[in-house]
Length: 84
Image (cartoon, rainbow, N blue to C red; front, side, top):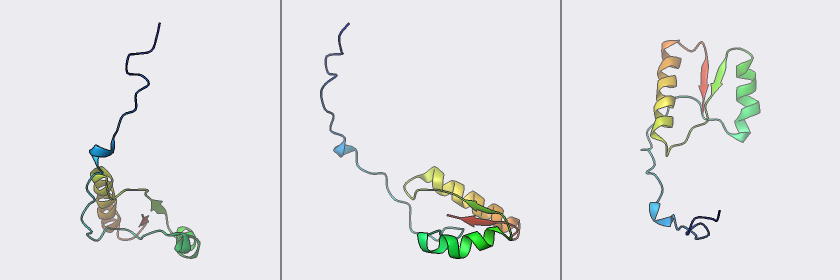
């Protein structure tokens, strides 16, 4: 049994483009950087839970999840922290 007829051909995906970035509205939660991870978030995590979410501005589902977690953080009145 051989390979399909176009198995070895390259496919150009450059015409697909990138997904549109979300508007630059203020996102809930604290921004995590390499500089503030150990200085801010490690001490904070010893006083209350910190939820860290890895997200992408190009993913509408990801933005929606950050907003949902931000609303939950607000409704729990700061008993835990959201980091993004």
